[in-house]
Length: 505
Image (cartoon, rainbow, N blue to C red; front, side, top):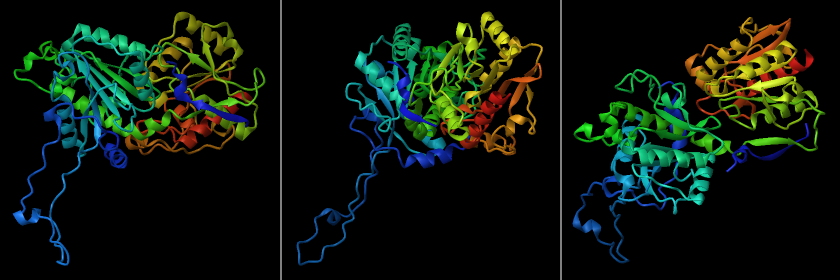
């Protein structure tokens, strides 16, 4: 298939259930040593090494030749641990240092629980390298208003796209800080919106299994953390309530407004903080590589001359990985020789061009809801020969529930049902009887060996195919640690079969 690599998909942005210990062990050897930034406060530095008890003569230089030198027993200062967190220093009145020991304590808890020792740094944005390989996680806390420069915004944005992560927490539940943080986040990613981090997000199970009845004192059933996603990663975390106060507890406890209002508990903040560090480390290797995944384009313009996929735009995160569809289409063209158009076609269900695409694809991570007009148009499309292929990106439960709810609204008289292993879709091109699943699925259910596609048949024709397990990230071999889906090889095989089936039926 004549496709060429155009550019990394990062350029499309304009402006204890998983075996965590294995991941950290493999990644630890690649964690860099400290950079040039100083520690963020004197007592945040590692404790001084224990004094070495040596006789006075041991500190003297060896005798000059021809006397045989004696072995010296002088010991070197142990190296500092590699940096994991960079605490951003900005603002007046040492605003960033209100919770003086927050990051240090968090790192100590992480060492006690996970068994790996990391350090922290004070980071000034004007001097920071913005290389995730140096420090993979930035942390900002404060209570006063702030404003980043355009240059700082651009560098932070690129840092996050290239694999970095950022935690912003509102110290003392400050209104001024909240307004500044939301303004700056919107400026960082004008094409995205802060969204509640759903309880099925890997952030809540990367080390501790945090559930809704565990982390608040009042009757709050939803997470209080919001985020910005790039692909499968939640790269920016914003907490309306003061996580740092929980990491640097005070006496009496009620002096912290977040606790006084009974919004959060110290246990919750510690567990969430530990999960955040585990999440960043587990994703580190794949995060730095993911922004270079290729997006394939046609060598020559093939408008109207090749099979293409219309990707449905909806109110949720509808395009988590812009490189996925072009990777699937390239595979279809390469193995079947069917003419394909590699160009991404984004389709609104309210648009006049909806019926120009006989094959639609829908995906996402989070909850979404179709408007009445979208429901009406999609229903008409499916009842008149259209084909819809959908999968849950990362195998997220929230999206799975949303898709089942919305397709029920579209076709209330029909039901999603499992496609049996002898269904023609499993032999449309590849003969698929058994499949491999990602490690995240195998860890939870090691007995799965059959593909699990579901479908809706309309007037004798298969009109909807849905996979509750992730296919999308497998199409470009993006098999990141928390992905609940098929192996990349089987993801491609299943994707090719679905397209060939739709073309031949």
